[in-house]
Length: 381
Ligand SMILES: Cc1ncc(COP(=O)(O)O)c(C=O)c1O
Image (cartoon, rainbow, N blue to C red; front, side, top):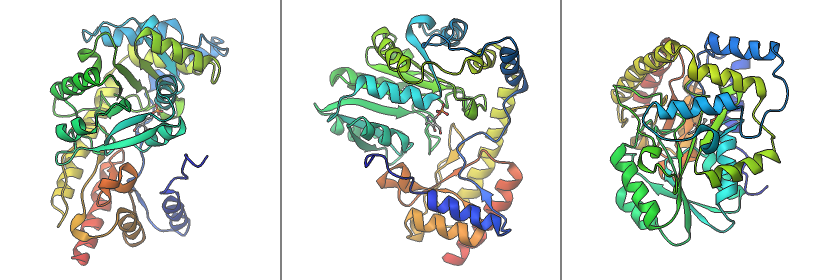
């Protein structure tokens, strides 16, 4: 249990709850989930599946129509995978990731993590007895080729990448992915490519999948899911795509742990992939509008450096001018302005001058809350 830390930010979120209970107006920018409801057609498909009696165990790998739909989702983009053989459906992308680590990593291995990175990767890597090794992406927050090459050693058995990235919204393009794949072949490690935000991209950017670079999946395991694109966080539905051997190993783990993803949820997932996509387009367009507003607010704040995100729903501005640690600054702006954010330190030691703000929140909240933050920062200079 010592390998699984208690969340660093728990104390702060409890403080936020206490302030709220005292009647303080709190602006929430810490949430890592869509504020939109799950689209109605998906909800109805879940209800219908319940009414049709889909309330029993399913095959551990997932229900065949959903496996096919996931296969088709990639085939339509020219990626040749076989849904029945290369896919496992899991209760959330988190479970896909954990099963992936369990089936490919040994205790004592080094696992590289391109950082800043979602903290769960490091915790899971430690949980399986391996050692997470952060590889910084300064100065552009996307990929520092030299740092990555220098980190590749014999003890490295895997690398975790995430594009679009939580917390920066930065994206790896095809050339980056190619370079990463070449390194994985040269040094014989597996790339865990977390592509869960791949549909939430802006300005016409199209996110390439690592599957396009490594179609045989000899060195690749894709992690993805429904939580973000389809606003389905609480349904718990994710999947992994990989070579048959890895997926079969993961199926063995799933058979003996969770058995399967929830049956009626899998039918809702089928509707998400095959049904009307208009609500997805609308949500993405809304995120892009918010992204434009939040980025311009941060870029105009005194002493704040902010890179415009190309995907996901987070910004990761740098407040180094102010000289506070990220925990201190996050607590200060919570107490003084009533704004919750996530301290940069949780995404990697190198990022202790940053805060993450999620824009999965209404435009009016963004404008009002961050207007107050800008006024407050002026008093600190
Ligand atoms: C990068 C990343 N991957 C995976 C997940 C988890 O997804 P799921 O809800 O499918 O477990 C998250 C959730 O915050 C995330 O940010």
